[in-house]
Length: 80
Image (cartoon, rainbow, N blue to C red; front, side, top):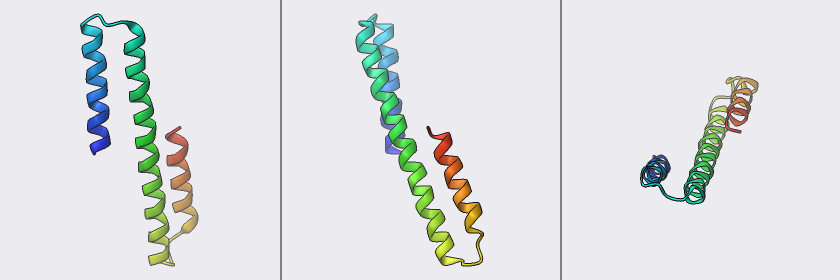
């Protein structure tokens, strides 16, 4: 959640810069930083989900491993 709040601040900062008529290079730099932060946040969420899927499989051997792996891969693909 902290990452999302920081990302929100970066986006709000970019909006404020645009409202103030700041140089477009500065706005693009700010938006680029927000984009990178968003990508890193999605990677953290997907990797945490993958770890959770593995733990569930270890705790419940009857769990369908193929379905859990498929779900994790789909999440990974969506995040790119």
